[in-house]
Length: 343
Ligand code: SAM
Ligand code: SF4
Ligand code: SF4
Image (cartoon, rainbow, N blue to C red; front, side, top):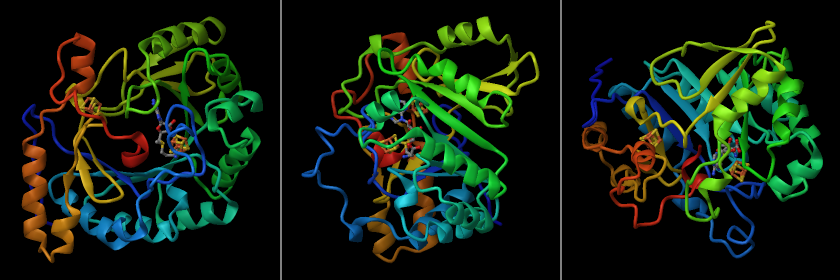
């Protein structure tokens, strides 16, 4: 295969591609798609504007040619997309792609779906679950969805043979910090790694405030006081989660310190929205459109050269600049919503 890995202006390679397959979701998580904004009148993307699964796979092939090795499928809620298994099949067949994973809220992870995803070649699953008690979980998802059904989804995935399942929990002060120890106790020793994510200022609709962020450091201390932890080296350069191991051998727990400790220096992620816009940062205001080129009959060389020029011009380091308290280029324009480009 003709592979020409490239780097951006800060010498970062492109390794990961996050693909959002839909902007829709059956949850209305208060920190992601608040009901007041994403209500009945909200204009979601019409079907004709979504990239087809074949178009997505074609772009993934192009990205693989400049060094992309890992694909994560996300959304919105990716399992809303019919026949997603076909995309998994096509992407896992791409030369150079050695990892393909999916992030889901778990609500549609039936036994059948889990088996089909596994058979299609999906390697790893991340299931989001922010609390185990229904009072809190329903307050967060805002659609009266019980936590037990997400746990059922996780069980279905295990039964289908997924043995690398992560559980993502966003912790927002005043909302679900009490859920931390419940999640730790429930998943310790289960083989599933819980990863606590700092509440981020993505998008413009969640009313983010720095006071709502619970620094991962505090969570590490809290968990360590009850279940002693030791730090673990990253699996690879650019790994987002900081890893800690339970000293008693009950597995690991992770922390994604997007706000308190930025990891822009190693950020090798590009994001492709459901309508074919490439975002070079989670906090970007604007994407780079590939759909028009794709639908104008462009050949692979034209797509490749466009993707190459997008990545080589990249200079994003939003979290780093936020941490330094310096002006962030383009920050006056609205940031893209998380449900458009995935986590
Ligand atoms: N619907 C799927 C899910 O919830 O797993 C996939 C898309 S969702 C946007 C991906 C991840 O982003 C979820 O784990 C979610 O908790 C996280 N997320 C959404 N908004 C966030 C925010 N403001 N701060 C931190 N994480 C956020
Ligand atoms: Fe939907 Fe995931 Fe956003 Fe929750 S976090 S609203 S499940 S896309
Ligand atoms: Fe990457 Fe942007 Fe996040 Fe920095 S802020 S780690 S560049 S996505």
